[in-house]
Structures are given as structure tokens and as C-alpha cells.
Image (cartoon, rainbow, N blue to C red):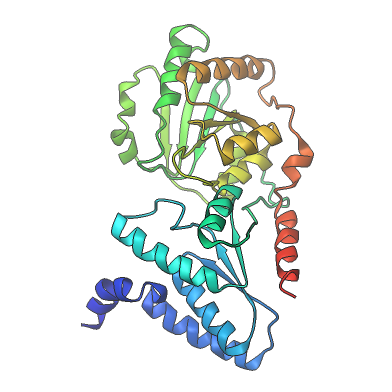
Length: 326
């Protein structure tokens, strides 16, 4: 009965205390810490909602100001079924309104969440670690490699890229044997879902997940890095984009989200955001010609803009929010 309650009832009755067993342990430990120490601030990172509810209760009991750090917003993004979305977004609004400050990961989410909550939302995006510089693996000789790092999902459709590559091959812009798409950490089931095998001339592979340091090494050794964006969701800016930025490899975002990713690539001059397969094909052909001259070719990046997204800089931004609590 206890297991049935925790798994099937608690998430609907007490979404702000889910996962329930974790909430009980975390809450008890948090109160022990606050009773023995004097903290200047509390930062609660959501998802899950339980972190926000614990922070809110601690703030009420000990008078400590707290920050609601929203990594994924159920009020802005579509994250689940309509029923669950409605329930969690309601509690997210309620708990966030109790916080002294609210932080989100992108300007798009901050703007929309600020409109919903009627308060200023601070943006502290994800970033990259300057010190994480793995050795570059040997590149596959003679192959222009397009790498996607991470798991695919039903909302991330790579077919426009495959259509573009087919066009490049058909027009003789890129030889078939000289281009390959690699999905690092992606399941084969998405190959079937998107029917990628219908693109007979396009060479691609799905590779198993590897450690972070190996993934970063693969990112640095790729010719082009692929981002599969969410054009219908405001403010989606995944952490991998910043690891891509730090690699100084050209980035191709498909489709054009006309939002956060496009803005980031334009400001940093790190790549392009495109939707039309013909435009994608022209861009790939252009980069392929540069790659033939120098397999380590680079774009004319804006280094000062890229450095804004280091974790060192993100820490400074979070410090500014903390200092504003005083």
C-alpha cells in the first residue's frame, strides 16, 4: 500500500513533495543544517518541485531569503501530458511567487515567466568549463563528420539535415564517401522513428554513450556540430550548446528556432541556424570546401562573446543575484 501511495497517488496529491521519499529525507537534513548553521541564502534548483517547497518552508521558519532556480519551466515549456502540465505549472507559479528572487536559464524563459509571475526573472544560463579541455581524438581521415552529441527525442527531427546531405551528394557538391553523420549517445529506435534509412546515400551511425570527457573529445574532433532545436518552445537552450561553443567547431542548428539558439550563434559567430534543406545544403557545401583546405578550419568567432558563457562568468552572474538579496 505504501509503494502504491508513493508511486501512484503522491505525485498527484502532493506534486510539491515528489519524489516523496526523497522529500522526507531532504527536508529533515535541510532542517538539521539550518538549526546548526546560519545561512545567508538558500538556492533551490527545480525540477523537481520538492526543492522549491523545502526552500520555501526553510525560509519561512528561519527567515533566510531564497532563490528559485528554474532549469525547466512547466509554465513556459511543454514537458508532459496536459493534466500533469497544468498541475505542476500551478505549483511552480505558487512556489516561485514566494521566492525572494527567481532565476531561469534563458532570456526567453525569463521573459515569459516574468510575464506570468508579474516579477523580474534573472537569467543565468548554462555554460562551459574553461578547464575542461580534453585531448582531441584522431579525426576519421578523409571524412567530413557531422556530430550530434546526446540522445534524440521525438521532437528533435534530423531529417532536414539528411535531405540536405542527399542534395549535396546528388549535385556532386560533396562525395558520398566523404561525409558522415554521427549520433553519439542516441538510440537506434529514433532511426526507425524518423525513417532515416530511406536516405540511401547518407552514411550515418548511432554510437553508445560515453563518459563526459570522451564526449568532449569527440565534440572537438568533429568537422561540424549539430544542434536539433525546438522552434515551438520558448527559451530552450540546452547545456550541450555551450560545450559546443567551447570546442570552437562550427555549429549547425536545425531547424531555425528564431530564438535563443539563433541569437547565441549570431552573437558568437559560431555557426548558423537554418530550416530549409536547400539552405542547409549550401552551407554544408561551403564548409566542406573550407574543410578540404584545412580539416581543422575555424570560423571567425567572437571570442569575447564566447567567454561570456564560461562557468566562471556564470558564477559572477549568480553572485550578483545573491548580493541583490541583501
